[in-house]
Amino acid sequence: MDAGLLSVVLCIFPQKEVKDVFSAIVFEAVYSLGEHVVPGQQDRDLPSLTPVLRWKKGDKIAQRNQTWFEKNCLSEDCAADLQLRGKLLLSGVHRQPYLALGGVKNISVNISIFNAGDDAYDTNIIFNFSRELYFIKMWQKEEKGIVCELLDLDVLKCSVGFPFMRAQTKYDFAVILDTSHVSGENETLQFLVTAKSANPESESKLFDNTLELSIPLVHEVDTTMTGMIAPTSFVYGNSIDSTRFVQLENMECNFQPLNFTFQVINNGPSRLPGSTVDIRIPNRLSGSGADMFHVIDMQVAGNGGNCTPHRNPMPCTVPQDRDSIFHTIFAFFTKSGRRVLDCDRPGRACLTITCVLSSQAKEEAISIDLQILLNTEILKRDSSSVIQFVTRGSVRVDSRAMEIPGGLSEDTSVIFEALHSQEPRGYVVGWIIAISLLVGILIFLLLAVLLWKMGFFRRRYKEIIEAEKNRKDSDESWDWVQKSQ
Image 1: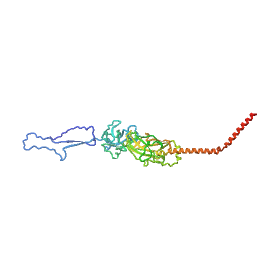
Image 2: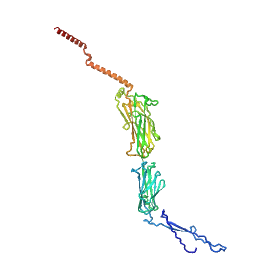
Image 3: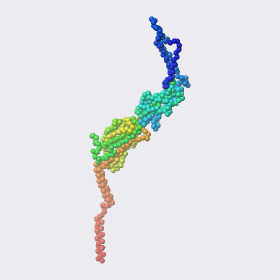
Image 4: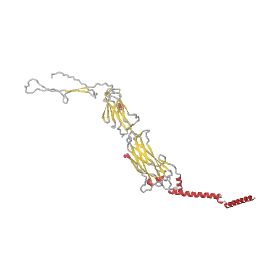
């Protein structure tokens, strides 16, 4: 090529979405010599010389040029100043300061971002949250070019105002997440929101680029308890056939079998992580008396928990008769109508059975079955004709759960009655007959003595009879004299 200047004009257009406006656009032109051809006959012995380009060893044979984007900044370094604000809102009408597991389906992370500095290029907001949450959608009141995409199951990236967020502008939007699969293993649900851009930002202004939001997780439940017993009443006494009762081996006591069934029901809306049930049965007729009940078996249905074992070391206790026969007879005739044994009354000795239950889903019920024997020998020593037992049951939820205010009652009561046959013992009947005869004889003797004291047995009946006879004879004589005249 002859000496001269060759110009080539290229027209280049940037792409629509430029992701880096701070780095220069580099143009590089690489050149080299083409094939060298010498025209004419080549009859010389030596070959023609080949031209070469002058270049520096280690460098490419190229020309580079850098073109920078024009900057329109208020500060020298085009620093942005991103400011994040946010809050959590629960779906529906829930306004509690906690998230009720199972009762709240969605949670909204409301974000407000403001740029107080220069135009922020490539502004992104990163959401980090639990993997038990599921991204549903992003909502914005007005379309402002906010686009969100999941980078991972627990990472969401939202691009704000691409390609850049103007200075002194504010964007409001909400990220809605599904909470129906949150297990509640952690006590709080936490969110980490971070705003960043490609612009530099002063270290003193980075404090409001990160936002930490959290809300307590609560198992909100409405538990209730029900109870029943079989039989609800029974008759005891000396005249009752012993075959109607249960007798333990090598024991002379007659026991009345009782079957209790309690149910703990979780009415939701959350899953109940666990609960404790206390069952209280009045166990003594008096504070210093013997224990009446003997626990045979305790079972929680479906392996839903376990109960503390309880055994009466002396189930067959026969109280000794320390009262006199007269006191026994008096007690028989003065039996009161009803006696109530209730564990809610102060000073009452009760048998307490505690059961720890496992977790319960919404609308799930766990049953507790108790088989208990009642020593009727102790009841025979009581002066009441009817003894009413009031058994109390209550449920306490786990510390991680919260009862709904104004919900169903967590307490229940079960009532059964022991009815006396009202028939005295054999020796009491004999003594009643003997005492009745003795009293009758004493009354007869008393009347006799009283009549004797009044002179009833000391009257002169013979003289009275002779006087009466003489009076009649004189009357007859007088009648004859008158007739003869």
